Length: 503
Image 1 (cartoon, one colour):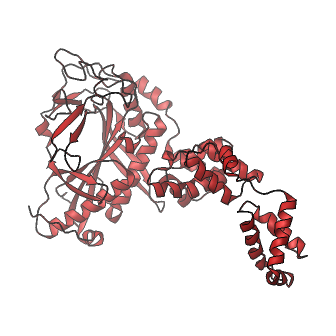
Image 2 (tube, rainbow, N blue to C red; image 1 turned 90 degrees about the horizontal axis):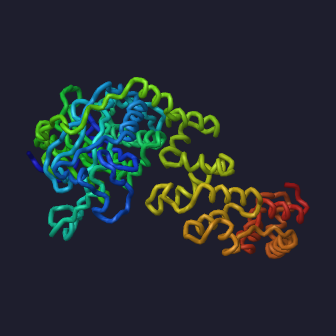
Image 3 (tube, one colour; image 1 turned 180 degrees about the horizontal axis):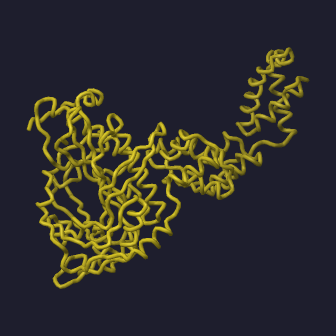
């Protein structure tokens, strides 16, 4: 293998090579108990307090399948247009690692519960790209390792490691795509759009919150390059546990450039796992990637096969909620917005927030305006998702109500948002504490208008002479005098009336 620290540009890479992707997404199900035992899945408990002989793999402890997890797996498979197996079983995936207390993971190998499906994803320009789904299978999560003493938080260089097995045994669904070909230069965008659409679907099904920042949805990015015009796939790398949409896109782009640099310099790609680094957008080598036979899969002897009846499957199919693409089309028509505008709302993660704000009483256009404007800006500044901002849809709806009543203008409303985000209380409390209500007293406004005219006679003469646009300067003077707490439209009306000019 030739090692190179150099990268070629993305454009140069695509001039010579065709990217092939495979995306493996692990979804942590929102069940109350673990996959094969009755231990709680609640977050935040004291380390190793939610364990039992089954999830610790103690001798003689026998697992029992979580029915709700099986039901969730079937729902996911149906929503992904998959076939649902009439009969499937679990297998033992054998490998030694400290966070696997049993030294094997109970998973599914050649007999997944759902297989051969697809998911259509919309891209920025409205094009729809179909991603084939190879399989969706059930398995259990591992424990959590915390490496102490190293500079990077990884095992290399650490003095010791701490193990928490509370997470060991939590139900997972792994969704594996078929090889994604034909993406070309849009491969990073397609990868991001696929994970975003999958996340929306999982949330719509109610089987997981799918919060990537909490590890409830994690993506492994497999990528290889093949010379343009050829059919044979190249050697792949697997970037593990990528946990944001932006990082999925960046990981694909970086690996395309890295692979192209290695291949272009005459080197060969090693099949390995890699780590993604948020700060640099780069990946580094992890370990040589095992082949399936290295795991020595064999059927789990302590679990009976899963054989969902066709009646149960059809009952679950009939109970599926409105799926995200259908819902977006309905909302797009109701809100009267374009495909591009709806895509922007989706990219911002704002759909549910806007809907909840409308349900709380806000007009649709105002709900979109504040979430996609001021609040999106704040989220971007803080480097968090919109939903993580400390403001609720009901509070945003109240702010729109205060604006509609004339108690606030847009400038003051932004200050109210600032106060709510700073923890100063609900919108009405912030208004009272900061003294932010619009000056609506006609006497006070009239006095401010007269003072502005008196101080700006030259501007007043221009307005009297027919240059009505010059009124903006007087409006600005009044707004400054009232600390932005006047209704600009009403101020303009009063100015023109005082000067005897028709608006």
